[in-house]
View 1: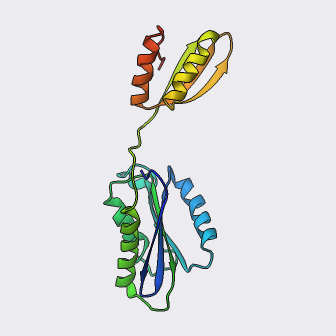
View 2 (view 1 turned 60 degrees about the horizontal axis):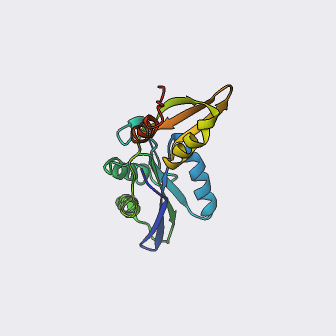
View 3 (view 1 turned 30 degrees about the vertical axis):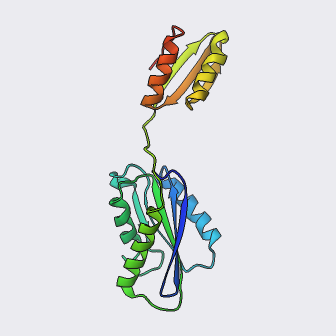
Length: 192
């Protein structure tokens, strides 16, 4: 998945193609991003997009739109580039300002493909690790130490208080291994 949002621009026959890449975790996030892009470039003629809002091989996460361009000239070619990139959780939006010269269907396919390749060339990716849930219950005296471990390892957690302190955790396999090592030193262990 992309580590950060990236924007590039290419000009073809006086038309501006502004390509933006965003990280999206699900299809619901796509519409929110599209609204922001449309607000940022309100006078543009088209805001075409392609996304893989999940794992790179999950065809249920694929989506695209030609946004008024001739059918099959923008979204599908963009999605084809994304499908061959091996990157998931990604949305590419290409905003077009018409420059007065018609590109034809072949020219549009090349332009949207080139814009998508251009922005992907600038994207740095990170591996998305699946997270599992675990819990840990400790006495009140251990809470500051456990909280410091969780914050140090960047583990997502919530806390519930009763006669003991119960931590509900969401963590990757690597985080779980590191935390387990720290807990063993204090005679504690995670509960699945």
